[in-house]
Image (cartoon, rainbow, N blue to C red; front, side, top):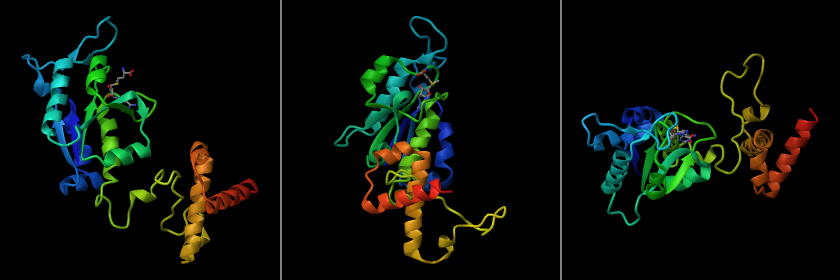
Length: 250
Ligand SMILES: C[S@@+](CC[C@H](N)C(=O)[O-])C[C@H]1O[C@@H](n2cnc3c(N)ncnc32)[C@H](O)[C@@H]1O
């Protein structure tokens, strides 16, 4: 997957290109990250990348010409593919990104991510250059870089070979519409609390069933909106009913 990132701060992306699972995927060439800095497309001697908003008001906007030039350079570098590259603007005004968005984006060969700074970007650039605005939540951060990194890291988890053989994004929360079940590691006792007996039983069928029940229960408790949206099969419905009965009789 080729990711072209339009950003005033390419150095920030070392957080994902140099570390952990995402860093390994970059080193193995599973994803390629390229940066297009609007500052490199300025024409004035001060290399200005911000400008005042029409109508006044606090703060600045990203200067339009260098931003558009950087987006076009990103398009140019990945020109020649059958489909033009999709351009996403990370924005608090976008649709909050969900797991299914990540799954779909992760299947694209190429993607351009535009990171805003200051008070954001000129609305005409949004209308003419951006295919979709995506948000990482209903709060405002200072720039699109952290949001882009969150998306990139999540997309990398769905690239074949990016996770170890015994790890799979398909088992993570949201992959099947539910939250992941609770997990435990050594020691067997922490602050006097043990682990559920079934996990020590070696009975793989019982463990699978327990995990599914806990996954349904955790989702019911923490994210009732997901349970309402889920289409549960008969086994899942029965396990959820058991969980609710046990929970309510505690
Ligand atoms: C300070 S914010 C601008 C906020 C803008 N004035 C508003 O109120 O909608 C600067 C940049 O951070 C990024 N950003 C801020 N919050 C975000 C969020 N929740 N999701 C994605 N990107 C965000 C966007 O790229 C935005 O252009």
